[in-house]
Length: 370
Ligand code: ADP
Image (cartoon, rainbow, N blue to C red):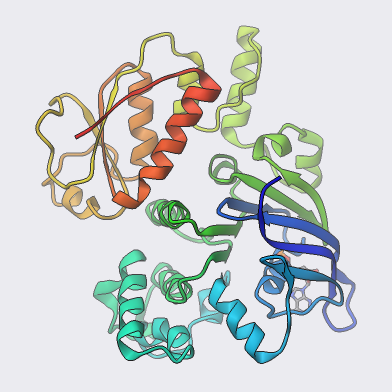
């Protein structure tokens, strides 16, 4: 059984005299995993998240962190909020200071940390969210996407063990969605537990280690994404649709009279399942200029923000500036060589994907670290 970092037992909650927003919710959040909450609008996801760091207090039942029931005195809540940080759906509910750096410094300042450590944390959080250059900018002058980054930076400045984000990708353009999901991969690679809510079934299917599904305040499913999406009736009952890759696999396999299992979650996994050619080689490097020894014909992809700027200025010729890991794995599955340029913190996620290709789809890829 997995080690749980957060759990709820029989959790019930209602706002004022309204109906129950959460009813008898019992669940466990596994330590160090990526977890997605799904469910229609009004299902209770935000209400549940506000219980994870004690902003709301259960009307019945309890919430546990690290095995111990939450305590609601000021000192205990302050300690909890260092470990469990929440990013609200609307950044305007979270940003109160007049400049970016002041806002990100707000949490650490309240921990009475030495000034240098507050500075260090702010710089780290701004770098992780790509906001370093805008640190002095008035928060009023930021775009929605930039305000979202500031809200995330504020949470990261607490150096939490659990990062809870309510619909982190809603309303963002494709590149920024890619950057935020990359960031979650990086933080998760450092051991952080990441909890999100989303309506994006394609992302939840490929990103999450496990999913919890809420409907009308009740928990209706906890398990793997495949386990949930394998039940079309349940998916329909909570007003969701099947992920595109789930449907493509189902229909293509039916047309070829082949088994649906194993279920590919991405296009490279679909190719791994179907392609008959032997895979190409995956070259991996962690510096920004093309290493010697990488064949000229290798298609390059970026995974992580560190080298994206070099790619944008043309110093590094890349075909996949975003979603580079998936792009490179797709090329390799077509029998071509690919070069993945990645940030050091993302190595673990690469290994996880390669491991899945080997174990689930029987495809061993030759990896050359250059
Ligand atoms: P979700 O995040 O899944 O969309 P919510 O947790 O926001 O769901 O809402 C769950 C239920 O609680 C809904 O019926 C919603 O109308 C109600 N609710 C949410 N916030 C408040 C509030 N501040 N006051 C009263 N009712 C609320």
